[in-house]
Length: 244
Length: 242
Image 1 (tube, each protein chain N blue to C red):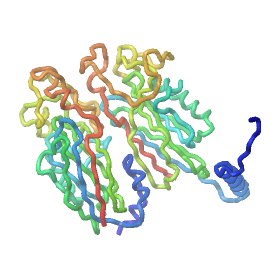
Image 2: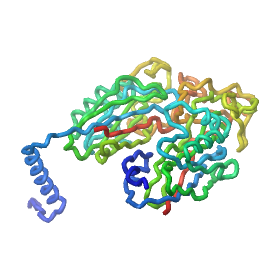
Image 3: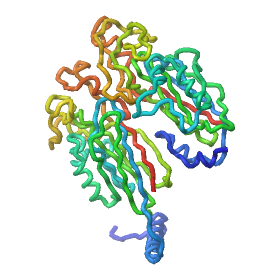
Image 4: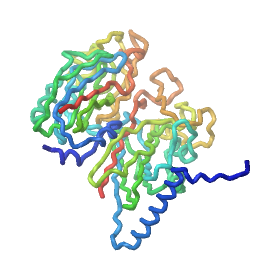
């Protein structure tokens, strides 16, 4: 197994630090992942949940988005990222919710069996709707060797690839490079906005500054509703069950 | 009444005495040994993950647990006020150096634009076994916001190991969040930095309530929607490289 190699590196996220330092020598191979949407009025497009090796990344904060990440963040298309994961012999679950994951709802993967592989890092992505290129993400969380239940908050990121104009109804808005947000499933959205923002200053993946919105359903700068479509971090809660 | 009672049974007190003796013993033996002392060296990276808030040069302090650059709910020191209002970390570094718990400090070479990272390296003696890290940098398109990480323990890191954490955005509580022309030192305004007055603000450190901006009905704000932020404002990565 890779026990020795994995115990060397303790690069972990936030509150998970204490948990992974308690890790014993038991090496577990089975993982299930539950994702709950904690937002008030934002849906997640089909989630991509992956167990992969330490050299694989769906995204990296502070680095430019890949074309495949851009397609996911702007239009919810995970097919390119799935191709990337297959090339790295990663394990993945696509679309566990069977469609959009509504606010407040959760979805759980089938068991991901990492036995005999070096796929000990967990990543999660899904687009946040409505947004231009916002996504919920977890990047390379080191799956602990010790069996147990681990919980972590997940942040909303901005892919840095599209202006946050917050406009709905534009042609083929979910295609990479096309302006506009591709939909607002929770309703309450307006029309006729003039555009909430020009191109991003920070064109690397960064923490999303949130939706601006406005309260004018027939005009204003944004087609999104500031009373419904705003969010604050964390936007999701991830629960990982590790068993032998 | 005026009888002084010495409680020899106090286990805490005895523990302190015992550990002092042990420390003294260690000190004398290591002085006599021929083993060369090796430094612990840490590479510290602060990544600006905001949309449009440059960070002032980051200050990084390594210290024992009793030092605090700031504490939630308590008034900012003058050094922190100067950092949070004007982006200068000189006085806050001086304050840290004057603390008994200080071990080492470094300031980054320059401002950290959104999407970029600043890196410094610090070394301390191998003998230090209780090492904490604190960091602070101003979000310069604000009145008195700073990204701050307070007292994370790093002494368990072995060579080659690293840990990462999210750094939240705090309000120093020393200047009202007017977002007004002439009050923000960053490129969005080019206004005033430090001002000694704390008039009009809470005078305690709290998690920042965010930027309102002129895009959200705050007509007198010089800030636009791109200057808004959510937490975290930065990512801190600490790697022990030696």
